[in-house]
Length: 417
Ligand code: ATP
Ligand code: MG
Image (tube, rainbow, N blue to C red):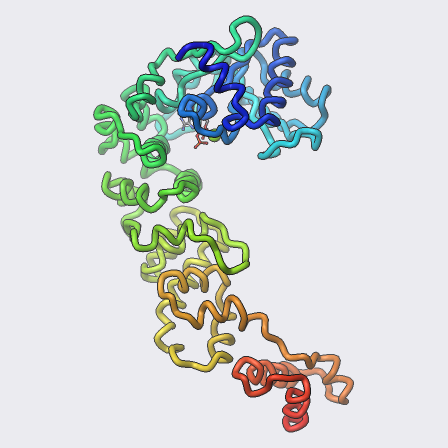
């Protein structure tokens, strides 16, 4: 790519929003004043070259990134989290920068070595070229010089641009997946995201040797990679590809492929107004048809939060319970569904289209009688379990259309009392 073309991409507000450009200029100027060569690297460069909007800034300096971070905090404010072992710092941006996310990683160009496969790397400061060589794939191993006269120069020692043009995900060396088996999942994720293909040599590295390392990874690291897959637009296809490459089975033998009939539900515009996380929805849709003990075993192995485990179990239980509830009165539905998290009810609605679930989420769950505990006290009743029973009775009457006005509710209350 010509330097002029690259400069045009760097200045395109559709690719790098102006607030990102401002933030980047501030960092580059500060790095320059400390005589630190400064580079945009990794995903930022890849997405710029693909003419796709840059999601987050990956900034590397040849020099001490912690020193740079301290200078930035002194000049602009905000806070710094240091990771001395990795020579990196996280700058928690001051409110003056109108920028999402609210943090930015500052990285010292470095070399990495691995004590044993799957271990976290040992880090030594190095040149930008060394830094590019420690990365995962050629398409993620390019840098753009940002400071001084060489501003806008592309560094591409591993031919990432050629692979980007041809749509190839290529690991940088034959030990790549053994050193860090999370890269197997990363490779498949980029392949799916950009509709690229795995390079044939890279594909061969997804083999028994790297599988042995993959199966030793901590549940937390595995789950994080799967979470990232669920953030992708075509997560369903990516999981299927992970399965077809026999990788799912290595992670846990009970992990199923993804039911493509459910794939669209990840993207579905929720007509219903409650918070739902795409990641939790992904796991619910993926694992809902498993047996309880399989869900628990996977949850343990992948270190799921108790909230996530609860949501998935709820979906699976509710789906099984549905036939029993069919043709019940709204009050029965409501009292049964209230025991499940709304996200789980929503997931079951998506795959069954049972209208009662929709009614529950959009209307029934908010139906309450006018009468309150205070009203019952005012009528001389002693607080106790009977309070709940009376209020439930009134609520059921509203839900089932037995009462439809405050007067009718009062009449019913008189009868009950
Ligand atoms: P995304 O769009 O998914 O965020 P990204 O390329 O920005 O893609 P990050 O996970 O944010 O990915 O990492 C930033 C960069 O760090 C990558 O582009 C890559 O160069 C490097 N990197 C990340 N994870 C690894 C890894 N496991 N091994 C080697 N290099 C990695
Ligand atoms: Mg990124």
